[in-house]
Image 1 (tube, rainbow, N blue to C red):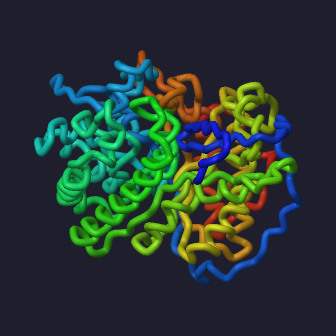
Image 2: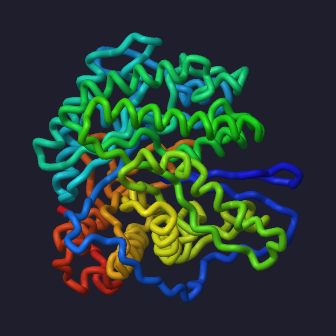
Length: 464
């Protein structure tokens, strides 16, 4: 996205998803809900006559759910740990502790009945020093993938989810930080090769990067470590470096496992044009959705994308977001926009002509009934696109449990479970029971109970 020669402020957000707001010099309003535009879903002929079983999944992120040190006191540090220490970043703690509670998390996944689980590897944990790999840490992830398969759950392995080892960090020179570090390409290749060699026997589906488009924008505005803007020139360079890193990983993965399935994990925002936007920012914002995808489309089998909400491309949206409230927005002020999901499925299908996987979708909500309504409305949107002929192969909910949410800390609650730290168990919310019921009802596979996605059937009891 080009911002040269116009005033701009870009803000990002996370629920496992980020978006960008570019402020331009025109007035606008920011309501507390988005009205339907009366979108008419066009028909397509993308979906196979006999589609494979639908993927029902859960997505998590290693840094957001794992503790900061392995058993035995082996330590490591990421750029986010340095950010916390040097720039006032939000601190995480060990309250979720999924690294040592694999069986606890597996029990919750089995109870949900999911068919797929997307998890990530903490690069710094498995390679705490350059070229020095922690075999115990690697074996942990291999064992997790093996246990998932034993329980009938397909592992989906994400190799990079926003964090870098501290030895690839240069907070003083952003042109040498992360993907732009002089040793990044060599180190990335060795890391991907090592992890593929150890996990390929148990993993067939690989996601090399999580939301690289969001990461590039986070760096541009200083939202990500080290916490100061990188500038547009480095933003362009970083985008190119991320594309090259993805293609490098895809080549290594296919050499390691010839039948590998490679998916993208892209952040997609549904932009609604502000009626006062006379300079056409809306069209410019679309570059955010597709820039990275355009560079890697030839190397992937599925377009995986994370979708959370729509947003008005408006100069006041950023300021008014935190004051939004009501049934049409999340606890973080994000617009709930299932119609936008339908529109983006259509656009992605037309642009790339590949099967689609929704790799994250969820809501920050302390009110679990709102989460249930959100889940149903977005799955209804997916159901409509399937019925219209679009080739959507799977849906992953974000996320398994309430966890660390980057710069927002532990405030936002996206999980289907809470964490009981005293009993060391995941306590299901009513939305977990709803998701389990929807999976059991095969609402995307054809054996659909037509009432299962109707609002009146919201589950109000706690899962057991």
